[in-house]
Every structure is written in structure tokens, then in C-alpha cells.
Image (cartoon, rainbow, N blue to C red):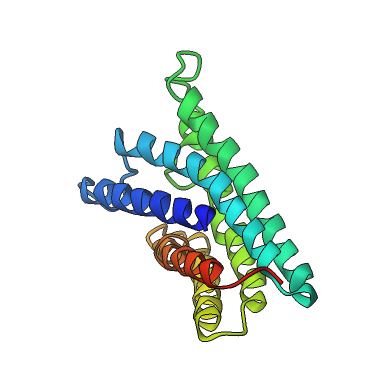
Length: 204
């Protein structure tokens, strides 16, 4: 319940900051600038431990015959956390260092303007690892109407996150916003409903 509540609070903070960042752009092609960008970096780093803890809770709650699926979901969430925490902490800390600032290769390596190494790794984490975590966790949920709703929303969240890969295929990062609906919008509802589910039932 604590991990679900913390996830909800941090995802809401992230969603509000992200919306404000998008609203501040003069063109959809522009990357989000500071202070919104740095705030988003900090929020992502803070989100990762609680999202992993949430999937640990799902694994603990899962019926015994579904533990392999919930463990796989937990592993993929851990992979997301390790990758995205490393990526965003590196960008947050090093981008302002004099040794990095002004380097010709910096935008190609560490910017969120496509194409770049950082952007590609971020897509790997959120559009693939997160999506797989949701899709493996979804079948674990069952036994009640509430669990059924969470299963459906988890599946939709994972599918939309995967759909964000269309931005890479089409070379249009506006299409990647489809994934944001999955791992911000729907996942927020998933986390909130998981908190309710955990308050009503015991791990099996």
C-alpha cells in the first residue's frame, strides 16, 4: 500500500511537470528546457525505487501458480529502474560540468532530441522494459472485479508503451507520446487501484 501510494504521488508530480514542460514549448519539436527538465530528471530517479517496490508487492501478492510471471515482471521493472536511473542521473549531473559543456558530441550522446544515445536508451527502458513488466504482471491479477480492471489497465498500459516504438520506426517522436499515455496516464490508475487491492486482500 505504501509503495502504491508513493508511486501515485510521484507519477502525479511527474505528469503535472511534464504537462507544464510541453505547454512551455514554442514548437512540438523542441526538447523541454530547465527548470522543468531537471525537475523531471529528479522525479524519474525518485520514482524508480518505489516502482520496483510496487512490483515486489505484486509478486508477493500473486498466487503461487503465477509467481513465475510476477517475478518476470519484477525483473523487467528492475531493468527499467537500473537503466533509467543511470541514464537520468548521468544527464542531470554531467550536463552542467565544464568538461562536458560545449562538446560537439554532447547533443548526439546525452540530449533528448532524436536521434541521440540517451533518447534511444530511454525508449529501451520505457517502451520495452516497462511494457514487458506490465504485460507479464497483468495475467497475475484475477479473482475479483477490481483485479480484473487492474489486469485490463495493465495490459493497455503495456500495449500503449510498446506502441510508442512507432516513433522510432516512423522517425517521428510525436508518435512516441502514445507511450506516455501508457506509462504515465494508465500506470497512474494502475498504481492507485493496486493500493486499493492490497488494502482489501492478503498475499496468497
